[in-house]
Image (cartoon, rainbow, N blue to C red; front, top):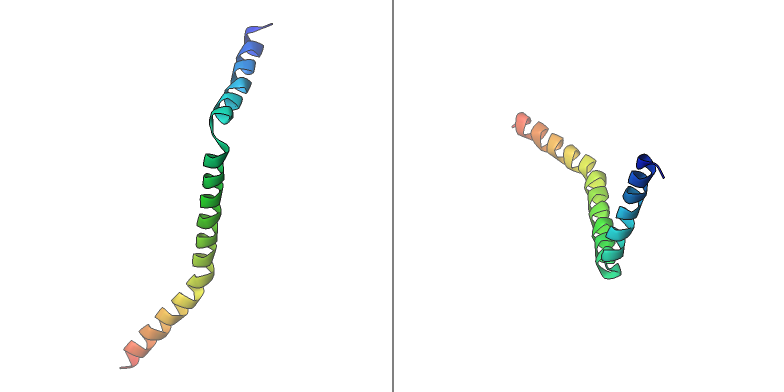
Length: 65
């Protein structure tokens, strides 16, 4: 076995060790948190155009006065 293949084998074993130590409960909590964050960010993106229109309308009405 060459030195390079031994190094690649050690690298491929590393993620398995890390994954084996993380409990399923902890990974589930992380997944749920990621979904909640993604939904929040989508909500903010969808909501932004209405906010900008309201701000523009308020600025126009302030200029008229």
